[in-house]
Image 1 (tube, chains in turn yellow, blue):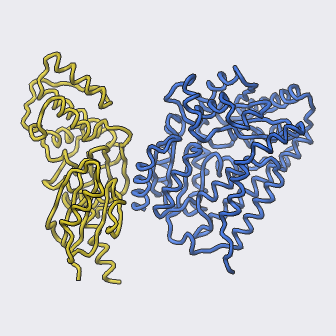
Image 2 (cartoon, chains in turn blue, purple; image 1 turned 120 degrees about the horizontal axis):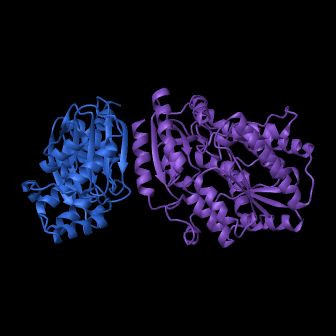
Image 3 (cartoon, each protein chain N blue to C red; image 1 turned 90 degrees about the vertical axis):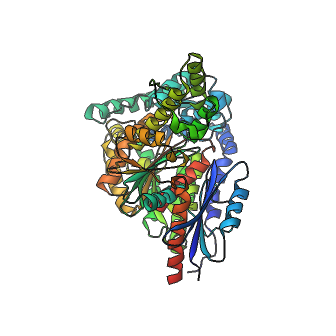
Length: 256
Length: 382
C-alpha cells in the first residue's frame, strides 16, 4: 500500500518538491525554473517518485504541466496548508513570491477563509529584490549582514523606476547596505498595506524564498505590527502544502 | 425524458444574430426606420420605440479600437469607455455607424466627459440622470425623459403620443418578464445551464430588432430548457453570482475560469442581468413619464450615491439563487464599482456569511492566468 505523497510547486523562479509520509517531510528539492518549467517539474518527479508514492499534487503557475499529477491545486490553498503544517497556530500567511505576493487568512484548521493577491506587476515581489541585488552587486546571502547606518526611503512603486532611484542614490554616495535595507523596508511596507485588508489577528506566517532572511522577517513584522513567524523550510511551503493535501486525498481514496 | 439535442445550437442562434446584424441594420435603414443608439440601461428605450425607431446598444465590449481611442483619451480610463469611443471614431461598429442619434446619460464621470468629445463628430443627446434617488431626482428625470421625447420629435419630424409610449412600455415589460423567467431557471438546483449560455441569450437579445419576436423566442427557449432539464449536467457545482462592472468580452475569460474550476454562474447581478431587467414599469400609472422615471431611476448602478438598492437586490438574489460564492469583477479605472466593492463585500460576507472575491480586469487576455488562479483558489475555498 502506498505510504507517501508528493507535492510539486512550480513557481516563477524555482520549482520545489516535497515528499510526505503523513507525519513528516522526508525529502525536499529546489531547482531553478528557468525557461522550461515542465522539464524542471519532471526532474523533481523523477528524483522523488518511487512506488511508495500514492498521490501527487501539483501547484503554482506551472501546475498543469505534469501529466503524472493526480490533482492540481492552486498555490493559495497549498500555501495555506503548508503554513498550517509548518507554523502551527497562525492566523494567516504572507507569501512573497518571485512574481506575485499573496496574503491568506486561515481558519483554525489550515483552510483558506479569504485571500488577496498582488500580481499586477513586479513591485514588492522577489523580482524587485533580484533587481536590487544586481544593481548593488550584492549576494543574496549578504542581505542579513548589512547594518543600517542611515535610514533610506525608496519611494518608487515600479521596479524600473526603483532601479533608477537606486542608481542615483549610489551616485550620491549612499551606502549599499542602507539602500538594500531601504528596499527591503519598502517591499515589506507595500506587502503589509495590502495584507492589512484581511483581518489577521495573531501570528502571521511568512513564506517564500525571502522568508529566510531575518532582515525581511523583522521588517515585515514591524510593517504589519503583528508577530511574524517563519520556518527553515518556508520556501517549500507550497510544495509541502501540496504534499499534505495529497496525503489527505490518498487516505480518503483508500477508505473508499 | 430523453435528451436528444444539445442546448448550445439554439443558443448559438442568438450570438450569430449578433454577428450578422450588419445586414439587418442596413436593410432597416433602407426601409427608412430610424435608429437610436444608447449606452446605459438608464435610457428609457420605450421613448424611441414609441416613434417606431430601433434601439441599439453602443457599449463596446472588445479591445479592438482602444489604441484608436487612446489617441484622444487618457490611457488609464475604463476600457468600456475607450472602446466605445474608439468604435465611434473608426466606424467599425454597424450600430454606431447606423445610429441617427446617439443618446448618453450622465452616469459615471468618464462617460460624461467622453460624450462631450463624441459630440464633436456625432449627433449626441445627453439625458441628465440624477446621481441620487429622491423625489426631486425622480422629478428631474421625468422632465428629462419628456425633453428627450421632444428632441426625438423635432429631429425626426414626428409626433410621439402617450398611447404610443404606453404600447412600447407593454412590449418592453413583456420582454423583461420573459427574460426574468429565463434567467430565473437558474434558481433550480442543480441549474439547467451554464453561465456562458445564459450570457449569450441576455446579451444577444439586446441586438434583436423585432422585440416581440425576440421575446417569443426567449419564452420558447425557456420552455425548451425546462423540457430538456438534466439535473446531472451541473450537479455538485458551486453556485456563483457574478457582479460588478459590465465586462463585455471579458465575460468569457471570467465565466470560463469559473466553470472550468468546478463552479457555475447561476446569476448575473450586472447591466445585462438582474440589475437592469428586474423591475417592471408600472403600466397602471396614467402618467407614462412618471412611470418610466420611477422605474429607471431605481436601477441600482454604482453611479447612484448612495446606492442601497443594490444591497436590497443582493438580499433577494443570494437567497433565491442559493449562492455559494460571490465574484465581483470590476473594470480597470471603473471608480464607482471599485469603491462600492467595499460595501458589497461587507454586506455579502457579514450579513449573509457568503464568501466574496474581488477582481480587477480589462478587455485584454494578458491576465487570463491570474484570473484562473484566483477563481480556482476561491472555488477551492468554498
